[in-house]
Image (cartoon, rainbow over all chains, first blue to last red):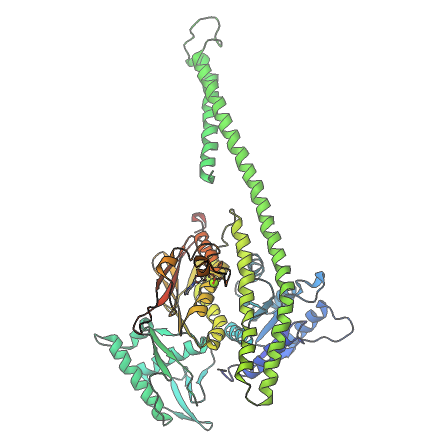
Length: 264
Length: 324
Ligand SMILES: Nc1ncnc2c1ncn2[C@@H]1O[C@H](COP(=O)(O)OP(=O)(O)OP(=O)(O)O)[C@@H](O)[C@H]1O
Ligand SMILES: [Mg+2]
């Protein structure tokens, strides 16, 4: 599954001397297919050093105003540039302490380095580490969460759009958005809760304990079940479909509910 | 000898010595001279005082010696940890180089095949998947070896810091979701309560233990994997559950043994290293918690709900008492 468009055209500054490698190319490709705009720092010249990357990265930060930075720890094979990424990190954070930075480390994430790096930074800076061998999908997921802010609207496949701010759910039909009026109040709250988890991570489910406040009566599970069924019917009606037990909103092993991408 | 008993010995020794000294000095005043005229020679209080003084002095001397030896040892250990850490950085970087290249090429091939627009033969995708899956294997292996070396160091302390436990679990779920999907498994995770908050623990140990559990689950599950994060008054719990064939009761006592795999019991050649659970349970204990297993074996009967669940339990706040 790809969640196309989650990137919303946000710029990601990529600072890595191996940006031409196959491995990085797969990450860049994934960023693009997920709707991000990777901006690759690539200094030119006969002898490019870590300093050149640093200078150009800092310039691009001002110039492009990226939403996040993807930064390698190690630059080149020279010992002097071994931890160049960490010094670039410090300069980036010094300039903009709120800039999300995802660091590529091709080493094990031992407690010493991470802790040492984090301790030298501002508490509020959002810096995270990821193994260079991580799958492109993992990189994008992590980056997306690091950027943090959930978008104003969350798309469920190509069928629905949920606008939590304005308390509205839309059915999408050929690019047109139709408000689904029936979904309001508690049903909307349930849908918001499910959509937020869906956006955060594909595998996350919302346990009953978190949904039961949106139900009433003695048997809260049963009342929740009814609400979910009504919700599914309302969503289905809006797009002239009928969603089965294993579609759209599913009960996972009686532990909670989860939104799944509807198949077109 | 523990820190506390050596401190006790030092303080006790010092006070004994002080009492002894006082007794010796006061002996002319409070003592009863047995034979007048030779005051110091036969004064019993002075004798007792001197004895007590020497006893105390010896006790403090021994305890100070012990403490300084420990300190020296501690310093050596720290640099040893540092040395192994550096060694592993280089090791992982250099060992990883060929793998990074292979992995990169594999992804490039995949992209090229995608671009042609034709459907790729199933066999080819399966081969590519196989290569892709070596990446998490390699990551876990390197980390397992690093932790194994670290566990040899009995003085090493867990690096306790404020940790967003839900975020750690979320990252692991992200890492294993693509793998689970490729194997046709449904991986779900959740935490209760929803706003889980911070715990004080060793983040990299937590990550490592749960990664090992999830890695096993993806190897054995039939279709479902669940990761659940909960808490009670004093502990937080991570349960990793899978609907795989389960573990035989006679094997349950062995799963945490170093190097044990079922082949070992059947006297066949091992298929894996059998280190994951040993490392996971040792790390859990080092972090003040424990790791438990519960499993029901498959009987071949449809209705039989065979499964395996590992539950990691760690203190909510594992800071030393003074830091709380
Ligand atoms: N979820 C599980 N379901 C069934 N059996 C399991 C499960 N987890 C572990 N085991 C059994 O316990 C054994 C030991 O597991 P452990 O993780 O220590 O080693 P390993 O997975 O064999 O090798 P390594 O983790 O070092 O690569 C496994 O070989 C397997 O037989
Ligand atoms: Mg294992």
